[in-house]
Length: 251
Image 1 (cartoon, rainbow, N blue to C red):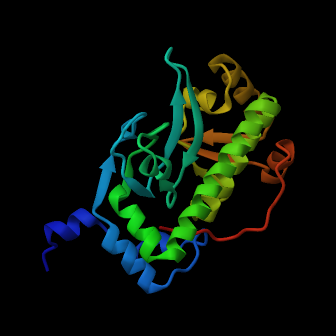
Image 2 (spheres, helix red, strand yellow; image 1 turned 180 degrees about the vertical axis):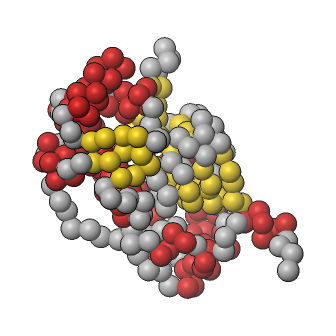
Image 3 (tube, rainbow, N blue to C red; image 1 turned 45 degrees about the vertical axis):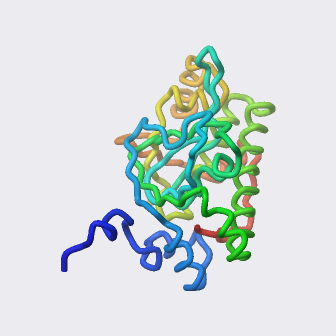
């Protein structure tokens, strides 16, 4: 049977979304999933390096990252950039931009990405008609804030080696919850410049510290995949301790 243009444009039906099978996400009643499906207006592709939301954008939509990696960033007038945090499949994208008059930061596709698109004008409908989902959106906003808090702690207090360890163990655990880790290895698409922008270090300092930690046996990297050779040691090095795993909402 031929797929209609509308079905193709909307991508995978929400009830059949493969992300819902991942251990990272909570089960959701079918009526809530149908409500989300009714809100969805597009399934959008953005190539690596493309803007999902640009700073100052006044018409940004709300997105769920269906596949690929992205990052939030803020730039200074002279071109210096701070990467605030990284976005992985299932993350809610653009909540701040959809609620404020203009986006206060940018979001860029780190790899080719697919996005489930929800119109900003419908966000208020969600709060009014589906309180359980509105609570989950608030929870996801708080989670995003906690990720940025952790990154701010790294930039402000950890040394270069500890910053790299903290970033690696955080990305490793998030990827593992999505089923993206195999034999302690996961796809690692970051460039040296993106590493430096996320860590708040110069490119030279980042490169030297990265090479030293790799030579010391903390991790290996080949073919675009990074392998943590001792995840527990990496976590201890960053003073990040194991926390009870709790599935999170998926919008």
